[in-house]
Amino acid sequence: MTDDDRKRAAQTVLEVPFFIQLWDELEQAAINGCIYAKNTDHETRQAYAAEVRAIRSVRQRLESAASGQSSAGRKAPA
Image (cartoon, helix red, strand yellow):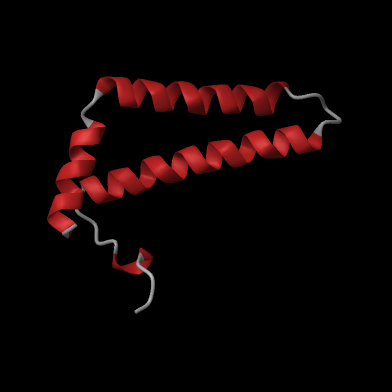
């Protein structure tokens, strides 16, 4: 897949309203899970925080690809 193909595909995905709403809901649910976990349940809080970070990372990578930023730094060495 060329960089231009990746850019167009990412732009197409980000134009789907359901996709945006779905990721918003997933992120909000993970944030709420983190906030409302029991004070002594550090593992649950940590898991929800990791989920939020993962969701934001995926979104950021899609937005970077859609804006045409090079993904050369993310490719495995030859």
